[in-house]
Image (cartoon, rainbow over all chains, first blue to last red; front, side, top):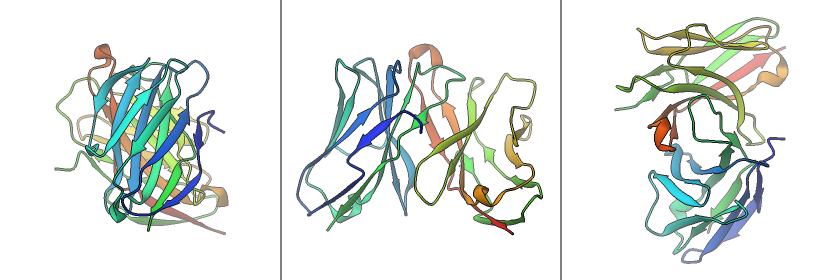
Length: 114
Length: 118
C-alpha cells in the first residue's frame, strides 16, 4: 500500500458527462501529480500541484481541470467526456518535487466512457 | 522524439534466473532522475528504484539494481533471482524539470512485459 488513496476505483459514465476523481496524498506529502494511462498514449503526465499551487502542466486537455485543496487532497475534473477519455487515471504524491524524491502512486481510477 | 525508449515489448525469464530490462533516455538536462516502476495486472504502479544523474554508484534495492551508463544514456533494470511474482509490466521513467523551481514531471517509456516461467 503506497499510502495514496484514489476514489472511486472504477467509474462508468456516458459521453458528454462530467466526473470528478479524488486523490488523498500520503501523509506529509505536499506535491500531487495526475497521470493518464491509455492503451494508445501510454502513461502521460497531466498536471502537478504543490501545496495548493499549480506547478507544472503536461498534456492536459482544456476539458480537464484539477485543483489541490488546503487539506492537500486533489481532484481531477473531466468534462464533456469522450470515448477516448477512457483510461486509468493515476494520482501520485511526493514530499517535495525535488531531485531524488520518488513519487508514490495510488491504485488508480479506471474510467470507462460509453 | 521519444525521451524514454524501452525496446523490449515482452520478455521471458526462468524462475530464479536474472533478467535485464533495457531503457535508454534522451535529455539535454545535466540534472535528471531515472526511475523504474512495476505495474502488476492489478494495475497499481509500484516504485522500485531511483538513480540520480550525479550518482556515481549504481542504485540497488534488494533484488533490483540499476545499471546506469551515463555516456550511453542507458538505465537498465536488473532483477536477480526472478520470482513468479515479478511477472508484470515494468516502466522506465525520467524526471526532468528544474528541481529548484519546485516542479517536475515523469516521462514514461512504453513498458516491458516480463513473464516469469516456473
